[in-house]
Structures are given as C-alpha cells and as structure tokens.
Length: 397
Ligand code: ADP
Image (cartoon, rainbow, N blue to C red; front, side, top):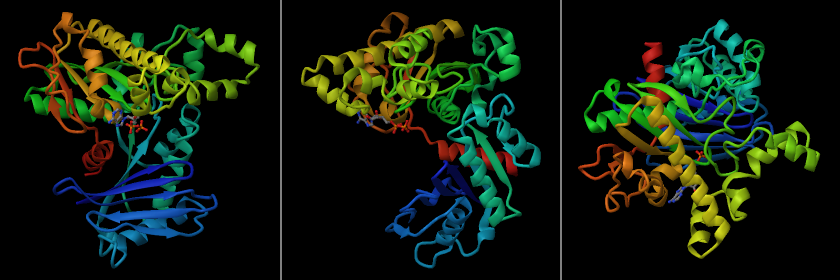
C-alpha cells in the first residue's frame, strides 16, 4: 500500500510517498513559490539524483499535477500508475476543537476546516487548497486530514481554559489548543516501545524543541497539558518567539512603539526569542558558539531556554503527580546535548540522572539517563510524516 503525505502551505507543497509494506519513503519533494515568480519543483526518488523543474506554477492544482507527473516520470518516478496510490494524508495545523482525531475528508469536514481558518490564518487556507488540488486530480482517492492539534484534545477544561470572561470562549473559541501534536504523539508511542512498557502506564513529558518548541504532559498515553496555546507563541523561549510573558507586556510595548496589533504580533513572533535576546541568531548552534566565546547575551538566551524547559518539567510533573520518562525531540532536542544536559542536571532531586557519556549523541534514538535513574531520559527523532501516513492508513482502511 502506498500513501502520499502532503503538507501544503500558502505557497508551497511538500510531499512524501510512503510504501506502507515497510514504512519506507519511495520519493519526496517540494513545490516552492506557488503563484510567485521563480516557482519550481524539486523531486527526489529515494537513492537517486534530484529532479528540478523551474516553470510557472500558478496555483496548487498545477503544483499537484507536477508532483503526480514526477511520481510517474520514467527516470525519476516510482509509480507505473496513479492507481497505486491508496490514499493521501494531509497535515493540518489547526483543527480547533472540531477535530479530536484524524478523519476521512467529506463535505462536512471541509466546512469545519474552513471554520478553523481564524485559528491558523497562515496555514489552514494552504492546507485546504492542497486537499482541493488532489481531489481535482484524483477524484476517487480517499483523503485523510491529520491535525497538529488533535493529540491535545484530551486536555481537561481547567488546563485549556484562559482566565478571560467565559463568553470569549463560547463565542470566539479562545482557549489553549497546542501544536506539534503529531510529533508529541509519535515520540510518546516510540519511547514506550523503546522502554518496552505500555504507554498507558507511563507518565511522560515530551519536549519538542525546534525553531518552534512545545512541551507536553502525556499521562497514560493521553495529553493532559501542553505549553503552546491559542497560537504557537506561548511556552518556552523559541528561535524568534517570546514564549510566555505577562500579557500586559503587549499593550505596554504597543504604547511605547505605537505598533498595530499585527505589527506587535510580528514583533513577538519574528524578532524575539533566542534572536531577540542574544542579538546573534535564531539558530541555537550560532547562539551556543557565541556563548562559548564569551557573549553574555547569548549565554543569557541559553539560560532562559533551559530554565524555561525545566520549569515546565517541574509543573507537568506536579500536574501528572509523578514522572517516569522525559523525551527530547526535534532540531534542538535531538541534536543539542548541551541543552539536554543543561535541563536535566538540575532535576536530580526528582530522580532524573543524565549520563553525560550516553548523552553525547546527535539525531538518533537513545536512552541517555543512567541505568539507576528513576526517570528515564530518551532522545527520539521525530517523524511527523510517518505518523501522518500511519494515521491515514488507520482511518482510510
Ligand atoms: P523547525 O521547528 O523549523 O522544524 P527544527 O526542528 O529543524 O526546526 O529545529 C531547528 C533548531 O534546531 C535550530 O535552533 C537549530 O539551531 C537547532 N539545531 C539543529 N542542529 C543542532 C545542533 N547540532 N546543535 C544545537 N542545535 C541544533
């Protein structure tokens, strides 16, 4: 069985074709700059040289057509017929509180997806165009939508509500939704497998630390809290995002700068975080290098990041009334031994003992706590596309 995983943005279309017999990727690629000058497709059959096509691509329908042609190409393709594709799985950033799990696309689902646009105005319109494009090209193909928010829908109301007047929730659905749910779900399942214990018996904190970062409390396999909120701005310090701060900072800064709401949003999302504090870069590698050379603001940014993660781990341990496993994933979590060690070395009081030698790894699965550590610490590379492919198979067949 072959499943096409699609991640559409407003001007891009990323795809991976999975062979579900062995969960391998047969081909993958990216259509970039859709509707903009210089649009192009880069396609790569696994193990082969990439194919690059630069041509005007006016919309997502044209982009999808190009992808399907590349999959059939006699040199770069991996399919003899498009009928070999059994289903498509679409990554959807926000399903609001309409979707508690992945579902098969029908008219009602498309209607609800449109209602979720205000919650992810930069992402959901592109996702919808992607679904419509493949429906146009392959009308009989089952489509499944897999939501970044779905895994967090098990949070109790007292964890997802904000202290605004209740009508704001009733009328405008203002609440915590979280993000990266597909990744949290994937690494939680994999960590339980690695430890050989049922997920339903574990209290786990999953730390997805990338350019955007979120931390989740996963109690007996269910998410009970997560650090991102209505939007991905909340939580720990990120590449260019503030993370948590007193909400009154917003009008305070606006009064000084005279920024409009949109300008202020941009300031908090694009100019802050590691970049804003260090003045060096949004990329942790650059910030680590600068700190090693004695840059104090770079060191401050690192201290804020590690301290923020530690506070969430403390809070979520209290929320779950205990802790068995910490999982690190995504760019920083998988690669920065310094961040993992910086977070864990202060948690010995609650049974977390990191093994510095085992922790010196990058980008691969490992248990990095000592054998006698009460809480196990794991590195698990995330694979959101594979999780989407698995969910698509589960829902469609
Ligand atoms: P995104 O959220 O855009 O998917 P990633 O998960 O790729 O981002 O994470 C990007 C982050 O991972 C960047 O801050 C980058 O510096 C960090 N990172 C990647 N490799 C390393 C490394 N070897 N050491 C420290 N940080 C790293």
